[in-house]
Image (cartoon, rainbow, N blue to C red):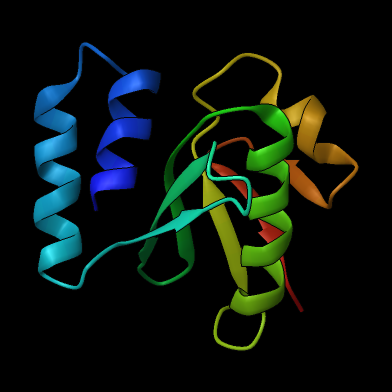
Length: 112
């Protein structure tokens, strides 16, 4: 968790309450964290009906590496990945990776 805390604080320095919520969810087993092989990026994931990407941070290459890894692992247990496109143009960046923007739902990726 120390590596994650440092990465999160760098990406979102003004969100200590969010960090506390994430740590509580991870401790309770309701969320988990993936860190890129370079150690510069992270994703917080929640297994709900779909596998939801709660938040990401770090450099784009690391985030895209995590997305690829999570896609491979998640396809065995989930039908879809979901994410709320909190940054402008995420839908464009992820379109080539199979993600679509649904009108009334978050950004999704079918895994089937």
